[in-house]
Every structure is written in structure tokens, then in C-alpha cells.
Amino acid sequence: GALVYQYPRRTICKSGTSMRMECQAVGFQATSVAWYRQSPQKTFELIALSTVNSAIKYEQNFTQEKFPISHPNLSFSSMTVLNAYLEDRGLYLCGARDGTGKVFFGKGTRLTVV
Amino acid sequence: QQQVRQSPQSLTVWEGETAILNCSYEDSTFDYFPWYWQFPRESPALLIAIRPVSNKKEDGRFTIFFNKREKKLSLHITDSQPGDSATYFCAASEAGGYKVVFGSGTRLLVSP
Image (cartoon, rainbow over all chains, first blue to last red; front, side, top):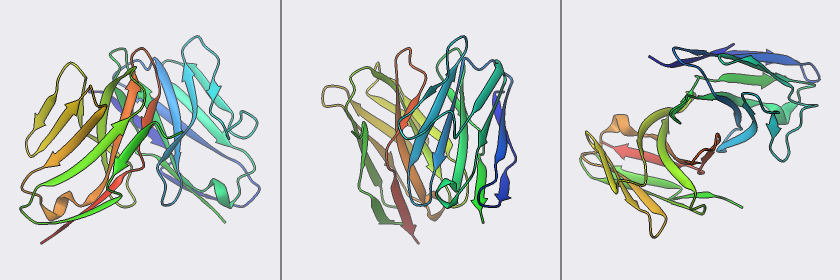
């Protein structure tokens, strides 16, 4: 079956430092990978969308300088949160879309900033 | 601009009752509507989904009713159980598009 693994599941970083999270699609080839953030008491905000053979597109309020993404192949993507501060805390979700249009989500990386 | 809207923000029903969660959308190009549920401290999981070619999708106690003309859909949970207590997110994606847009969620509480 199709699964999406995210690593790490939870992480704590000091304010001003950076952390990297990974997303692995298993059992299918991901034609696109989207990264979302769910801040406390909020819905899911799309950070950026990475599509095969296209440039990574960032949504308003999110930049490559703050959330650089690497998508080297159809099954793997990573995103770094640079200079993390309190407002960056939350659950970061990776959603990978297969060729039929279904989107599979990982279990997320929960970021705590101290 | 909020492309996917949900109501109510929170809902409480008694065990055994039917819970009705509402969703509406703006963009006519949306062609896939998944519902996700999320338990506290967990990531969302796909519950049930529908495409506009259908006006109803049923999976056990969960049924989606879809009205393409009015751009509305609803999730009905029959015989609600305390274990159904969670936040439910309506989402949408467009034909040929790659991103999923989420609503703000409905927090459901099923009281025993």
C-alpha cells in the first residue's frame, strides 16, 4: 500500500536554530509533495508545493529563505525550518500525491521551539 | 480569501444521534473532496472522499452528501459514538492541480 513516512515525529529546537524534516513516499511515486503547517488551534496552511520537473512554489507568508525544500526524486522530500522561533511551532505535514490524484499524508513532525 | 468553509465550528451530539458537518467551497474547478479526521496530538487521517460525479458517498456510518450546483457538501455520521469525537476537516483539490486546500475544521464531541 501507499504510505508516507515523516521523520522525525517530534523535535525540540532552541530559538534561532534550524531543524530539518524529511518525507518519504513508499509504495508509489509522488508526482508532487506539499508541505503544510498546523499551528496551535489552527487549520492547515500550505507552505509550499513541489512538483516534479517544476520549480517549488511557495505560498504567501512562506519563503524559500525561511523554509528551503529539497525534492531530489519522486519518493523523497526534505524541508528545513531556518532560524526557528516561537511562531514556527506546530505540526508540519507532508502530503504526497500519486498519479491518480490521491494525496497521502505522513504522520507529521511536531516542532517545539524553546 | 477562504476557499473552503466549514460549519459549525464545534458540535456536540449525544451517542446514537446523527452528526451533520457542513462544508462549502468557492472554486468550481475543485474536483476532489476528502474529509480528514484528527484526534488530539495526532496528524489527520483520510476518512472518506467524494468526486463531483457522485452526489453521495457512503462508508459505514459515514456519508458524504454533495450538491455541485450549490457548491456544498456535508458529512453525516449516523449512530455517533464517543470514539468519533475528533476534529473533522473538509478539504478540496482541483482537477489537474496538486495542492489540497483545507477548511478550518469542525470539532465534534459525542457525549455518552
